[in-house]
Length: 194
Image 1: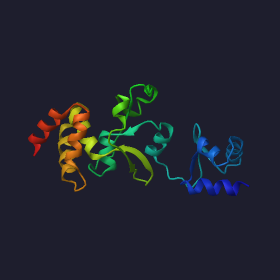
Image 2 (image 1 turned 45 degrees about the horizontal axis):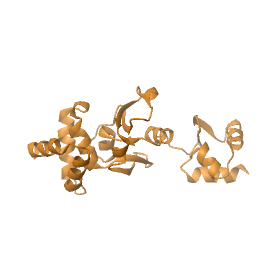
Image 3 (image 1 turned 120 degrees about the vertical axis):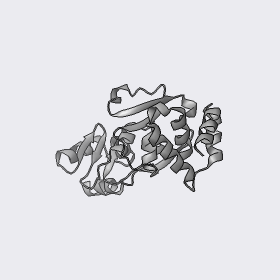
Image 4 (image 1 turned 180 degrees about the horizontal axis):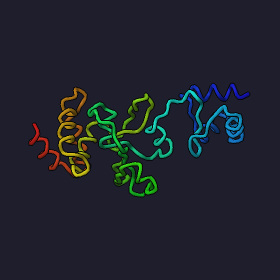
């Protein structure tokens, strides 16, 4: 009986949430039994793994907080625009999403709900798992708008790398800048570094 459940979990990279388990026909009672039998380990509240799971803090944080988007240095890291592994994750969420309890483990940025989705795409973590992340164009806008949150030398180097990236769309960046109400700031910055 548990072989069927293990197959489902292993097909999901060795990890499953209790919510997803229920959708796939695995009850909480069965999850508990598999933990008791040491078939599964409880990684965190509602998150279970097999020994096939490759640990990934970014992915686990995303599972625990589905309403966040990785941003700033973390987004640059995912897109290969910086060699520095973030010491703390940079995440953006809506103003009404209370994540104050995890302020020590992340750099938390809050925005109005209407712009949280702007530029949100799926990205791969270093272990190949998929998470929410801002695209390069939104990331550049955020960095220019909040330069105090990132080392200026890193910011300039990263932005230059971004705009040289053949997938970068300057028109889209300026479209985002208008929606974020920072068009003049972005235009001035871009003129200065080009």
